[in-house]
Amino acid sequence: MRKGIICGLTDQIADFEDTCGSFAEDSEIIKQLELEKIENEINEKMASQGKRFLNYLLDLAFIMIFIFVFYFILGIILAIVSPSTLSDMKEGNMLLQYLVSFIVSMIYYTSFEAATGRSIAKYITKTKVVTEIGEKPNFKTIVIRSLCRFIPLEAFSFLFNDGSGWHDTISRTKVINI
Image (cartoon, rainbow, N blue to C red; front, side, top):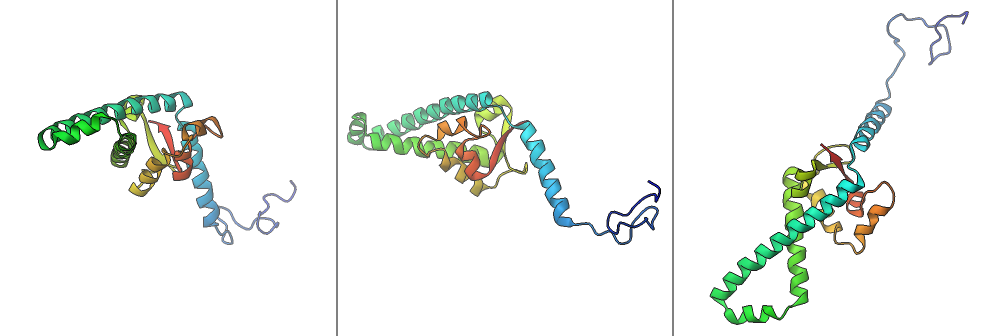
């Protein structure tokens, strides 16, 4: 207290008034602090588990509608082109059904989230997908995110950690409120 202002770098009485000539900013520390600040802001905006579950249910309903429309159009085309193939499909080929569900789901999630960061359900709930630092995810990240939705038991991954699913964790994305 008797010495006055002490320089934190030299432990001597400060020999400056407004700026310190020997002070050197550590750009790595500044970047780290800025990233931590952004991550904290993103974490504060994260969508609740209830909203995420509503997104899941709404997206599932929309995917089912798209699958129905796909089969309807496919049925019309096959009725015109190859009626015998149409009768074969009525018997219920489970592999074909899984394949169509996978393709439609991939197209649904990838196209909507890559273009806007939001699926139809996310428009309704006013949420969107961002990277861990709040930026719009690139196409590769969205494809990885969409593929990860098909990991067995992925839906149960929301019960652990911070309520993020494996498709969030693996793709390093978050869903935030807008």
